[in-house]
Image (cartoon, rainbow, N blue to C red):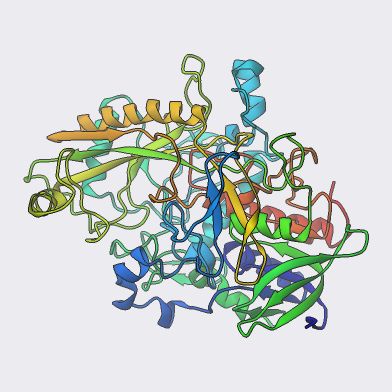
Length: 588
């Protein structure tokens, strides 16, 4: 049965999460008629995120109530190209979101800017260490933008969120209490830092004593009431410990529902359609221009929505899959190194140390926000000398515990039985007297880590699943060993009775949660031979398609990716409204 063709609009936004909301707002303000297609359910703070129902740990943490339905749409996984990939039946290692607002509904709130050395990773490495320092098979690329390019857009995004933090560098002047390694910013954060939990205070004292430079983690769980430039009112975080995997009932966590979406929904130029599964972007006969998008609604009916401009702004993995299904850009072939779509998939390399205190030290882990905590950036990016160490990348270290939820948080020392009465006794003994020091490390793109379409398995609509081929590069395992050792040193200085630590080790497994920071696959750059989109996130091959998301990252940096994603969304929106709409075609 043929798809029903709908009246044309100016622009279609695919996915109404962070990117879709920001781009939708900017395009409608420019006078465009915009349709937003969201595959998931409509939802809002009231009634969908209200307690006590939203604090159902079994529903949202264990059964993944806000995540992609793997029974209808999943991906297949293997560690090596020589292996047969199998479908992921339960998302564990990473958690793709679904529904209106996307993954920004269930994020924790860490809001870091990437450093200029992250955006210039290849040129910086070659300049400082020489070409031969880059390990064989590692695909290190510059982004085509700088921290200075993105600074106004970082600033705008942080003021939209109301991010709570302390600047470390305003217009080149170092500021006490902030991150001394950050690049210059134009002004202070919109709200002051969140209060420091006790475990984080112990970390600050220990890190300072070892000569490091601790600062409060920038958080989009707000430290005080705030009204953003769009007139949206946010509230002070209550430290309830239900951030990651949950919506916020208190209007205290920055998400599309609290920062922008109601304004967009009220604009007569915008039309939202939920429960619409996008199947493909349709191209003209020359395959140089997108003419429409085909989607299926909740009843299984197919529709074709024509438009002049298309914004692909879904979760990183889904961005890659849609381009492959639509034939936009050449698929990456690891055997030849040719092609770009699916190239440079990267993840995050996490590890940490656990500090077990005597019972007189009460950590109170349940009194946390998703992004409360104290960290050091001494080993982020190129803030330290890699020369003698033999690896690229780095990470931040911090006491950033986000919760003490009873099902997920039950720390016990090494040697404790994994079940039975002894395990129960150990959980009761250590629950309130344990602190975690986390390592959040970068992920280097490697030629053998990539995304493509699976030749065997299909989704509920009969389309090939995305296939992930990934394992931790040796470079990243070496980095993790180094940083985990530093974390353990700080942990021991915190004064605990016992410290347990473990660096990240291979092979990568999809059965253990690590992070939802999937990046790469539609990377940005200045060379069409090694990037899917140009520096303005515009498809090299189909210029009226812009692909915006963490899929644009040529490799993943030390810091959490969300602040950079928001900055790139505003960067692309500025290019579209200021350049593309005035003269459609490839922006130079």
